[in-house]
Every structure is written in structure tokens, then in C-alpha cells.
Amino acid sequence: MTRWKGLFTVMAVSVGLAGCPDAKPPAKVVRAQVKRTGPATMEIIPAEGQLPYCMLFTMSEKGVIRQLTLTRENRSIRCDANRPVANTSFRVPVQEGMVRVYVFFSDERVPAGSVAQQLYDLRDRERVTAMDLRLPGRVFVETLEFTPEVGEPEQTGEIVGAGGVVTSDGGTAPDAGTRTLTMEPLAN
Image (cartoon, rainbow, N blue to C red):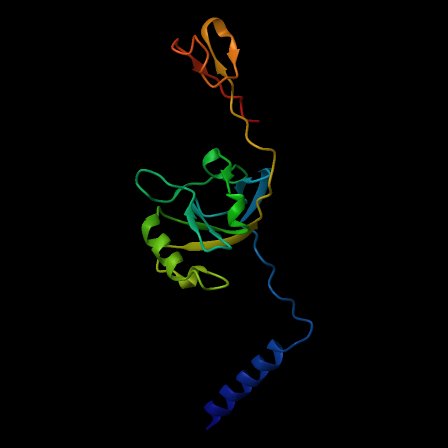
């Protein structure tokens, strides 16, 4: 009987300490951040101390799931701290509305196909955690939000005709049969 009394005493003390009003909840670890690079473009920047590999998916308000880090092997990629994932900006279609960005950090290269299928199966959940997924090794999930905005309309270049003359007639001029070069403005 003394063992049971000791066990109940330890449990009572543990419950009493757990309900302590001075106890602070653990601080949320920020694993990555979204950096807006344009009205509808973003970069994902991993924080220091994260697992070495990652992959990105977005899920829009309309339910569209997109894999952003697509490679030939269809596996997670190397992600360096404080540098944009894949050294690129990602465009989010404005018509799809706000997106949740899922950043999956892992200690080994994970096949993206299984993650995509599991994310699709969990699409009705408000929140997806690493515990919801069946993945090898250590995995952390960071969920971010991004809302694309309508920006300036995209510009396409004018048609350059013979002699470098810009034509605005869409190639219907008498010299339309000559070779032309379409030039696009550089993206900022």
C-alpha cells in the first residue's frame, strides 16, 4: 500500500504544479518566414538551426495544392539558413486568394510524392503538424500565410522588325515576312 500512496502523492504534486498560474507556455519556435518580393511573389527564408532539407507546398483558400520545390528526383532540397529556398521567388495566383505555405524541414531527403498525397488527404484540417504525417527521420512543419495582391499588369515587349524598328501592328506590316525578334523587359 505504501507504493500506491507514494504514487498518488507524486501525481497530486505533479498535477498541482501543472496548474500553476505562473507557468509560462513554451515559446513558439519560428522555423521560417515569408518575405514579400512583389504583389504576388514571395520568398521563404529558413531560420538558423533548422534541419538541412526542406520542401514547400501551398494550399489556397480554394483548395488548390501546389508543390513549389519540384526537382527531377521529386525529393526535398537543401535549404540554407537566412537564404531564400531554392534561391528564388515563388508566384502565387491572385485568383486563388490567401495561401497557407507548408514548409517541411527534415534531416534526410524525403520523397515529395508521399508528402503531397498525405497533404491532399489532410486538406480539410485547419492545421497540419509533423505528427499527422508518415515520414522517415525527423520532420518539422512550419505553416505560414501569404495573401497575393493585384499588382501592375505584366508587360510584354513590342515586336522588333527589320532594321531594329519597333512595330506595333502585330506583324501585319508589308515587311511582316522578315525575321523579327521579340524582346521582353527585364523583371525587377
